[in-house]
Picture 1 (spheres, rainbow, N blue to C red):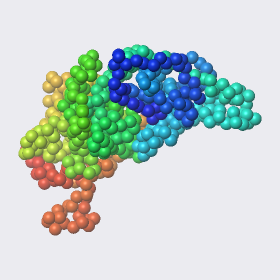
Picture 2 (tube, rainbow, N blue to C red):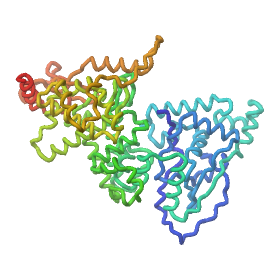
Picture 3 (cartoon, helix red, strand yellow):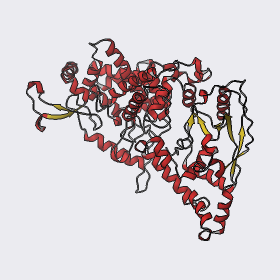
Picture 4 (cartoon, rainbow, N blue to C red):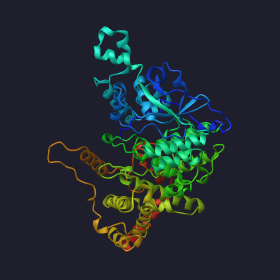
Length: 563
């Protein structure tokens, strides 16, 4: 993704903390334009200190570097730019429309396109991704190297040292203080009226996608608050700050879940493939909100969004979180299920290899497969917690080697599910059922060929074309020239890594260096020592349940042999 994150530059504030009603009188605002130096310069402007984004507004991170640079150039050249729309209440000026436009100019003034001083303080420097830093640097270079733009500070220096700059630059610098945005103020009498204006204006201009809109409408509810906390790793604007006494715990859990999902940061050169794809992508918000809802029993919010958007906030589940208790519950539930998939500090972690389960051979993240595995593990975990003698995870570990080889051989089933049913939330339940079907048959001792035949006979798996099972769906872009394209290089790297086969000695399937345990070959209770000859790398869960998994493997292998 190449979007520039400008979200740190204008503070957020709760629009609804104001007690507003029609009996209160509004001051008449006569301002018709926002001038660069008098109104928008954070270092000098009194007006800027009153400027806010309503806390329900989406992130200011939708523009690419070229668009940010283009807006700055248009502003300097005096081109026509659409008006900024504000709502004033008791001296606070809320941006109803134009947040990206205003933020782009403020970013230019501060030389901060996501990795400047303000952004570092807002996000926490260690939390800023490589992608966000890269987009900051690209935007800064586009602006600073363009002779029609240049860094803001060069205009300031031109006024102080006119003999050092061209006449053209000097004229621009002298006129810059008078450059402005036209501004309109809406006459909303209440916070609710202002909110309705925001949705109407933004729905017509740059439409908000369904996920964003549901989160905005559900902003006081635990699923929305938990999702925002995870996406921002407990930093940025703290939507949970009103939960006195629970803020620290919410942030701690959100940071942990964010790390489980998005670390190590996606880097194809060094085989860093996080289980949830890139944190800085168009899919990340849908992914996080989707799993928060799925894991916490809110499937309707995931699957009936168009219907939900027609309702008022009060009619959308769940109920508003008054004290943070539900937000904490939601985060704890998510942490448990994601730890099952991949965690290095949890005995229940199966340490799934992202390259097998969640990426194509060309390194493309497959969100449908991710949702399907979360859905499947949630189901198994619910069954296990309801019945202590449930062996679902042990059985899976016993046939995991065969299941993963099946997935690698028929990875295209995931692509077919996406193409024929829809991506992400539209098709994950069908893919989850397919995974369960394959696993059940492997546990029963069936071989690949028989399983393919069985799949073709089940009507609900009609979206799978078994006769097209080979991996042909990803377009081969190998050119005739000598230099290979990036995705071909990635494919070679992934295949080399998978072929290396670092295996867990208990389940015999691939292990990763992001989720492993050091296991004693001869148990300590049987006199085993901690020397290197008696140690091995296993999955955390395999270490915890190795006797049961080993026994089940023998039983299943005996079944296959007898067949």
